[in-house]
Length: 421
Image (cartoon, rainbow, N blue to C red; front, side, top):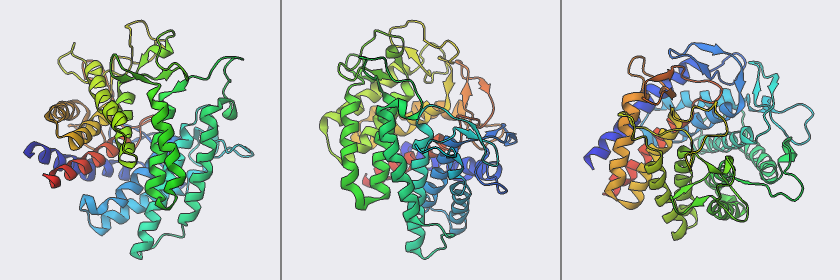
C-alpha cells in the first residue's frame, strides 16, 4: 500500500503542477476561442489550425478537473481557472459544424477563427463533441448548485446538443454512408469496429453519469456495447482485435482483421470494468481482466531493454496493411491507458500482479515519457528503444486529454483502494 500511496501523490502532483499548467499557459486562444494543440516542446505554437476532436477533448478535460477539484484538493482559485479554460473551448465547439449540413456533420479541422479546412469521414469528432457537452453540462450544474457564476451558459442546452449528436452517431456507426463513407459491397456485411464499440461504451457511461435522470434511456447502450465487444474477443490470446465479423466474430482472413492494437485492447478493458459497475456481469468483468493481462503480455516489448508497449502489430506476425504506421514505436496514449487499467484492476481484484504491472508501466512513463528537461506535458512519440522520435507536445492527434485523464483516473482509483484498506 505504501507504493500505491506514493504513486497516487506523484500522479496528482504531475497533473496539477506540471501537465495542466502547460496547457493553460500555451493552449488557450483567448482571442478567437478554442485551443491551440500544435505545440512544440517548450509550448511554442507550431500551427494555429484547430482539430475539433482535440477541441472537444480539452473541454472535457478542463470540465472534468473542475468537477474533481475537491478530490484533487485544490483551492477555489485553481478551480475557477479550470472553469474559465473550459469556457474558452465550450464557446468554440459549434464552429465545427459544416454550414448547410442537414446531417449535422462536423469538420475535423478549421482555421484559428473557425472556418472549415478538412472533413474526415469518421465519426470521432462527433464523439468528443458529445463528451465535451456532457462534462461541461455537469460543470454548469455543479456551479449552479454551489451558487457560482455560469457565464450565461445553460446546462439544458449542452445536454440537448449531446443528445442530438449521439442520435446521429448511433446511425453513423451502423451506416457509414450517412457520413460520407463508402458502404460495403452488395451482400457484404459491415465489419464491426472495436473503436466504435469503445466509443459507444464510453458515451453511454458518460450520459448516465452526467444526466442520471435519464439512466434508463442509456442503459440499453451499455448492454449493446457489452454484446458487441464479445465479437472482438480472441479467447486463444485473451485480447480484443480491432476488426471482427458481425456474425462470426474474430477471424484472420484479411490484413485489417489481423491488426492488434494493445492500447485499444487495454482501453476497452477498463471501459468494460466501468460498465460492469453500472450493470454487473461476471462474464464481462472476467473478460476485461483477462484481456488486460493478454494485451500487456503480447504488447509489451521484451526485445529492447526499455520495454514499453508497441503501437500495433499483425497478430500472426505478417506484414501490416499500412507500412507508414510506426508499428513498433512507443506512443504516449497506450501507456496512459495501461497506467489507469492496471490501477483499476488492482482496485477491483487486490491481485498483487496488477500492482507489479502498474509499477512497470509507471516506471516506463517516468523514465521516457515524462519530460525531465522541460517538464509540463509528456512526450508523445518515442522510437522503439524509447529515445525521443518527435518532441512536440501536441499536434493534430495529441492534445490535452490522455495524460490528464490517466493521471486523474489513476489517482481516483488509487485513493479509493487506499481508503478501503
